[in-house]
Image 1: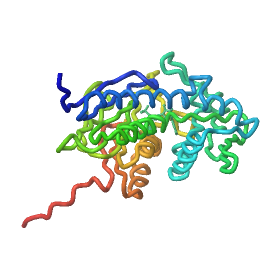
Image 2: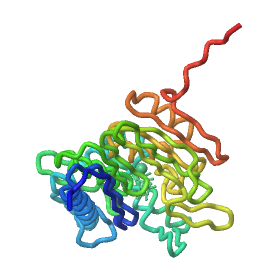
Image 3: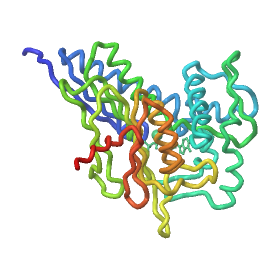
Image 4: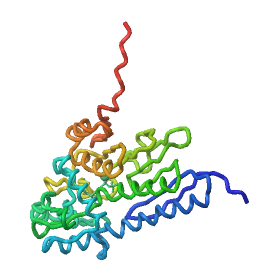
Length: 313
Ligand code: ADP
Ligand code: MG
């Protein structure tokens, strides 16, 4: 049997979603091993960052950090620092303490917090209540009741790490996806990868296709985790200002060089809405965005606008 260069791929349920890896390898056996390494890395990151696992580092921090400064791994400390920077950048639209309210949702069981619970917990949503000490690598919370959840960047981190692993194994063409986050390595051998943005209200249908290479793309949608009740969609992206699911947008897509950033920014643009979201993206030269609002209308960031065709008279 002769080993031939080929595209390899696999998809597995991980992190409450599907993680997939697709790569071109000159040596299929080495390609398979690299693929396994990416899935192993996704599992490792999930064990570190899942709030559903009592033994995870994030669960330990959530149990202890309101009582005492809690030592974090340098990996966790760095990621928390990045999350807080994005909170600053987005004026608090992205906020890992959303989980003070978020923990009271169970989408499968159609459970949501009542108004009193939201009112009590919303005061615990404020990224400024998360204190990082560079000297001691510790995390402390400013008051009891604060809880953090990295669900808004963990998948971006997984695909970024996945691509780093593949690159270090000599792979030059790949796509790594976790839920709504994709990081591309190189191109599809001579042409760009085509990444689809889902139609937010038509299951399985693609609304827009974007040609991309060597970039990250993230979509946040109100169709990922949700239930409908009395005509209201209760979904998983929480507005830190109100403690309620953010309204006005059906999906927000961001693309650019870094998947951790695109992941956090897609959640942020979803929360900020079309106008504020796109004006934020306009200040970031490397990042572009496509937003579909609640009426199904599609908006593009300025960098994606086609130049005006000169009128011929
Ligand atoms: P998905 O790919 O699951 O749609 P998103 O990138 O849209 O993921 O992130 C949604 C997740 O982010 C939620 O499931 C939750 O864990 C977390 N989250 C929700 N609201 C916020 C917020 N305002 N700031 C930061 N993270 C949030
Ligand atoms: Mg996101």
